Image (cartoon, rainbow, N blue to C red; front, top):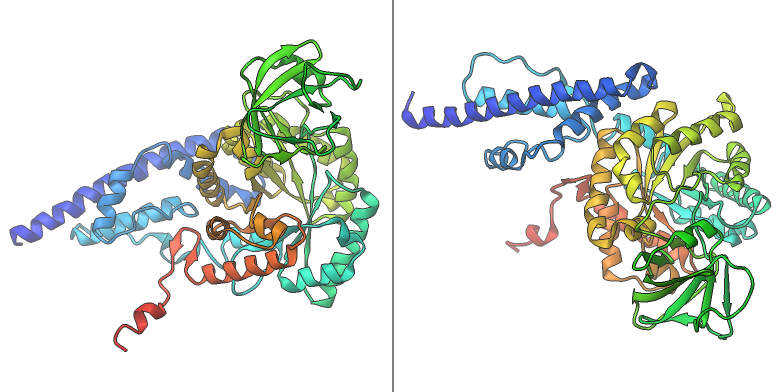
Length: 502
């Protein structure tokens, strides 16, 4: 053997030993993590995915970036796409390293021909259960929040289904049971017309704190950066310390406990301020960040308190009542503002009381708080212990809670963890919002859809231009599908390269 050949073999052998050592430790830690989840109580059809998830969690406790670069430089897998098949990827890489190093015979990994991603995978099958068969030319399904008109305008619903709607979302924070029933009837009618199984997704509102009322003498109450407004739970209309706009919050305990300099956010972070001074009736808040042209204040918009955890039950009395409708009409039920395992267990307890075994539903957990993200691993396991449960990345409230800078990384991490657990993800909030509301999309929105295409479902909110929104979203998803699957770039022939010699 020449010196050059020996040197190359040594490089492969050293890497083989490094990957093998990594595999051994990931296996050991993964087994320990899996055992801590009490696997005997897991659903039988979730155990394999849960074990892979445990291995992925074990892997992500380590920094393997240097190893990835060394593997990539040799033309091998850099381990950047192993979420759905952790051990099999490590085994295959180790196998090829051993063969390249001319090491003694190494067993061919049993995973060599096993399908672990794409069509036929566990995630693919579960995605069809959650969001329907979908279209042949795009991976991600399209979910749309049903506008009030969907209860009375059959033609509108027909056009939405024809344009590409796969899942109809009914937001239980708005309208009522009578309206929701009419929506469901129209959705089913449209599905029959176009021979498509449109899934019904009911979104249980949860304990979101909202502006209950606005007290002002202004005809057009708008806020600007630098303005102050008063936040109170007092329902008696009177002057509040020279503030022209007074907002009512329905939970007095929160208002009474706020401290100076604590952050308060309105309308999914469109208005951000800090507590300037506290008073017996409430707090004065000075706006520190918002659009330069100001914003009109509206009742029912959300209020966030990013600097504190709110000790509020995950299901309100109204939510529990709404579950009665959901158990009859929904294919999937979404739960909001889940913080920890206690919230998941409470949801399951209520579901067990409200939904009989033959009515049991698929579920999703909305991630929209810091604590929800920090407890993501255990929330995934606990929720899927009872029934198949996906994750919705509710980027509006989540951005307010964690900050816009962290959101870009956090939404990536959620996608990775969910793929490792083989559970579907919904990419939600402000998708093509400018187009849906005004008829004109922004360039950033197009790029956002390209990112969202790695999720199993992308959600549009309602607006005057919802049909244009569905059509554009469908077109982008179809185009991206030819160039990318999850994090994998697909090398389609490119016309700009094809014509280089012409």
